[in-house]
Length: 180
Length: 215
Image (cartoon, rainbow over all chains, first blue to last red; front, side, top):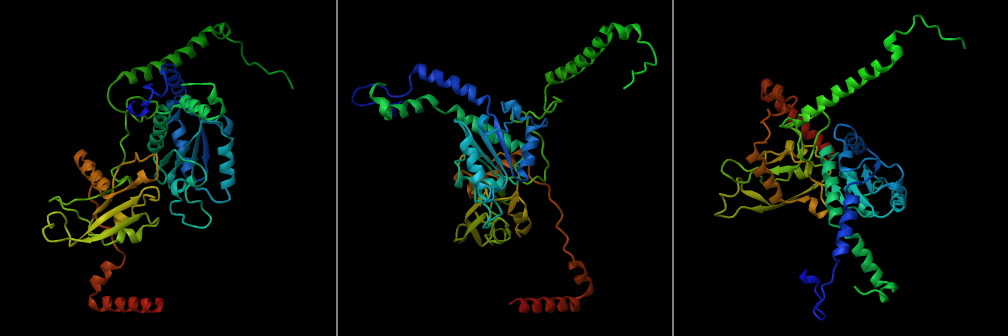
């Protein structure tokens, strides 16, 4: 809290009690229902299916419904090689997803291009969309993917959705009428 | 469409319908109780539903190829001599080695005359094929069993020397080192030995010619 303290007024800046409790509630809801959008373009997709199926059952972490529409999805689960022809599609799907959204890059090809150092392969999907969690492996084990999902959940827990919005509002024109 | 022919009348039990429902519910309860009882038992892998991953980790094969480790020998010296064979054979070109010469007084730290000053593996590029392990003359690099590699940034997924040696020490502590396997038989090597020096010479000549042609 020391960093947030304003030296002039002595008022502690930061999310207040109501805001933090509300944020906790929102994060609680979000982390327990991270619906994935399965974007399997190569062999990593097979391992992703194994994770979603009954053997490992990703639904245990709330990834209950695999959303085949980007508008209802929270996590873009990119599994497989992205060729340069595929880039507009990937970008469009990412843009169609509603906020808040997270991206998992699964496997060597999605993370960095892997062995395909070629003219036709995108060298990592972080060249076109922001990636939250990278999962190395070719393909990673289902446990590896679940670990990645747990990392996303960890990130959601630490998020401040309302405070961020409030700060944005304060910096914008509406900031003149509010004082916090 | 004709009327379906009923060969026999329904029995009283079938007509009541209740008996069949109770039978069906009985099967449901039997399976529920079976799973429920199994879930109460302690120990790994008792629940016959699915792998309860973060709490109950599945046993994986001892020859599984996961995160790499750099081995130390019995005296705690680094085996790697930074010859660069793994770097050269790697299909994804994910290994970067810097070589350093062992100075006087540092012999207790390194097994060879040279050592790797830095040894970086880009795990995001790596495809875990195990060719580096096969190419290594000193048996210094081995693919371990670590599979929990996900991280938030690209930089965090680059395994440096410290992490690789740490992997080895951890695996050694937990007794998860790979069993030693017999060396891969090389085709023709045995015949050349049996035939004597003459054939070996001719084979060598052939190789030389091939090289010349290549050049």
